[in-house]
Picture 1 (cartoon, rainbow, N blue to C red):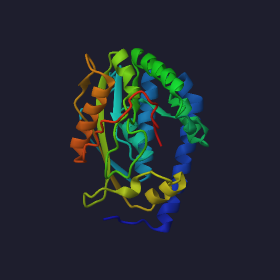
Picture 2: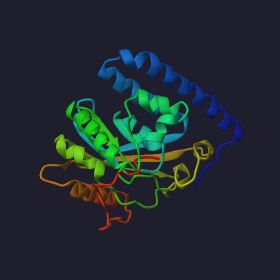
Picture 3: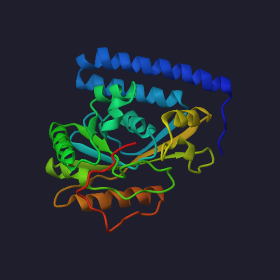
Picture 4: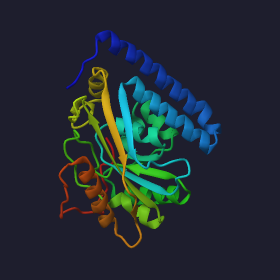
Length: 268
């Protein structure tokens, strides 16, 4: 059951959201370039947590999340909304892989670039090799990197097949693979599809849907790590896909016809 907000509450939330984004932009421009890795993690985590609170997102984290000592880890998660990024960053900030179009978004694109996002040109096979090299380098240097192997978002009621092309860096860097399952719920425990950002929905549509709700419950569960030793990227895709679908009680979308070498539509 969705409990709607009043117009006054929506206006107040919007005003606070604008101020929070401005604070984030100033921090990214002035503070982050001179910050230690530890301080960058703290600032990104606290900004993400504050953003979720402003939007009425009540996050619960299950499992053993990453911490500041976690290094050389690749996180793969199902993809429902642009909020997914901030759920993960609220637990432990990571470097995301996103579609190149995000870099051109007003404000948010600049913010994503400043926080270390790796951008992929969709539909260009040659760019997959470039981004895989960049991910391998980041992992080898100790970074935690995250992406959404479904390639695009859903409404949260089903899981799309996981694409395997961006999993090769985890093998090459000897990284730990950590599946993460996330979902948005109503107060009665049913799936909240109005938190989703999918199909032809615009960012403004999504923001209106979120601001119109009194509260959204979000759950993020970190699953057991998967060893990359001796496995192919296809095997890693299938194992992480099965782990997440089982956790969320969604049908496993495994398909035999996947062509793993093609570049995915990385993120909405």
